Every structure is written in structure tokens, then in C-alpha cells.
Image 1 (cartoon, rainbow, N blue to C red):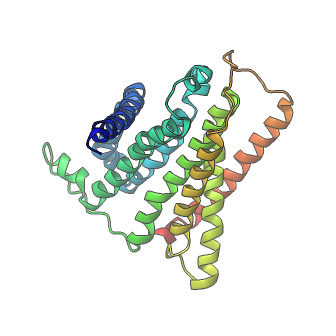
Image 2: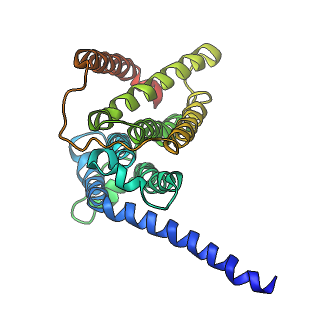
Length: 274
């Protein structure tokens, strides 16, 4: 038993070294993009309330989700190096989880920062360094509903985009995965909101928030299972129209139309979320 302890310790250290290397590698590969998101968030917190309602700060997480999901999930496909990446000795699912930790963790951090900035009236605090802005604190009638959706809705968009781009067989599909992510998240939200209206006659987040969280977890779990058995995409050529491009264009047009209709409905009922 005594002789086995160093060997067991070595395996633990080796596993930790792999995780640390994978997470650091993903952070380093996307560090410029993440730094750009941080600069953009600071600009929104400081400057947005001067020209628009401070509540728009909460929408920043949605923008981050749209970009981060495909950027992390489909990084190998879009860079044309998936075959090389799959040749590493580290398990695929471990690499999948490392990207999920960095990408998903970044999204959650920005979503939480947006809520804290709005709750603490951070815009007014920062502006007082130079001027007395007099910006009033934002009053929200349903903080549980709104803040719950601010956290889980962008993550649901991220989960769809991340999972679909990770399983993509072409650069074009990986790049467009955010579109299907937005459509999927809005469909789930619209369906659960309808259930809330039928059951409670008002929006309260009792169905929508848990449903979005559960669907996000299921999408990521299913994607990780298929990713572990995925065959490497060797197409490293330039972007090109897929075979049957007219069907692809019809699908994209249908997705855009669906997003537009759902977005108009949510915009029309915007006051009910506050």
C-alpha cells in the first residue's frame, strides 16, 4: 500500500496538470476576445445610461452568448484543425468540458456583473467621479423573473450555439450555429411563458427559468456524448455554399423570420417583464 501512494498521487497530479493546461490554453486562445468583452461591458456601464435606459445593460450577456458559444464550441472546425486536435492524448470530452468552463464561465460572469451593476446603480457611482449625474436607480417590479431570465436565457443561447458548433461538420454551419441557438432559446421561452399565462395569468418565471436551465443542461450533455464519438472534420478549405444551398437559405430565412416574430412578441410585452 505504501508503494502505491506515490503512483496514485502521480495520477492525480497528471489529471490536474491536464485540466490546468486545457483551461489555460482555452483562456489564452480567446483572451483578446474576452478582453474586448470586458472593455465593452465597462463602456456600457459608464456610457450607456447617458444615451439610453440603464436596463439595456442586462442585454449584454445575450450578445456575449451569441458570440462566445460558436467561438468556443466550433473553434477547431472554424480553424480547420479538428483532425489535429483529436489526435491529442487528452479525451475529447475533457476538452469539451474545458471549453465549456471557460466560455460558459465567462458568460455567467458577465451576466452576474450586469445584474450587480444595475442593482448597485454602478453607472451613477462611476459618473460621480466627474459629474453629478442624478441618474435614478432603476426600479424593477419583478426582479426574480427578470434577473432569472437574464442569467438563464443567455446561457441557453450559449448552450445551443456551443453544442451545435462543436458537432458541426463545416465552417458555415459552425458560424451560423448562433442563429439556431437564438431561435431555440426563444422557442423554449415562448412556450414556457405561455404555460405561465395559462396557469398563473401572469409572468412569474416559475416555468420559464427552470425550463431554460434544464434544457441548457440537456443540450450540453447530449452534445458532449455525440462529441465523444464525432469523426474529425477535415475540411479546411475556404467558406463555400453547401450542397443544396437553396434549402440551406430557406432554412436560414425561416429561422430569421421565426426570431423576428418572437422578438416582436417579446418587445410588445416588454413592460410585463419588469
